[in-house]
Length: 227
Image (cartoon, rainbow, N blue to C red; front, top):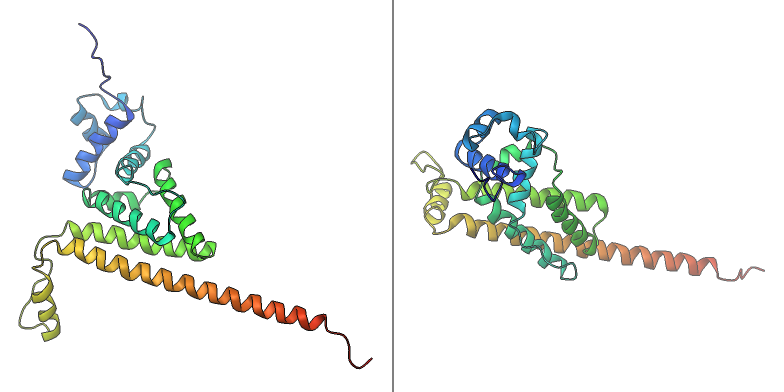
């Protein structure tokens, strides 16, 4: 019998099958994955060394759907484009999110996304420490929004025991078409405006320090009138 032209097993095929299991069950095991692929568990280890490797392959598969911006664009537009792609990708695989957050990020494609985020915040005037904090905030918001996109149409129950303000909010917002996506866009612009405001403060602080330094330097070069 002739061998198939395409090998049955590969790292990407394993990642795709594992992701299908996670999308259905929220988890995967090596025995279940091998059974789904109709191979022996030991044969999987010819292509991956551990379950952690498979998790990173799934991460890379999800993050690979993001269309990355160029490095020469406006830093706010870069953040916006990455956040939108990030959210839409993970909204397709919400059950993958808890699994990924329990593992250290090692996937090269995913780390490239973080490279671009760090470069964008640096271009906005953020310090390295502030950049990491801002990236973490953006990360948390995007992943939470992806989980919200998978929520049932009725996220909250409204009863007479609740406050009038809460019941009015539920009545006004819960039935809105594409509520999760619209909420994501609303929250994203709030975050981006906050980052933009923070960048302005960094710039003003830098100018103030520069002015103070120049004034101090000027005074040090003044002749001693008491001579």
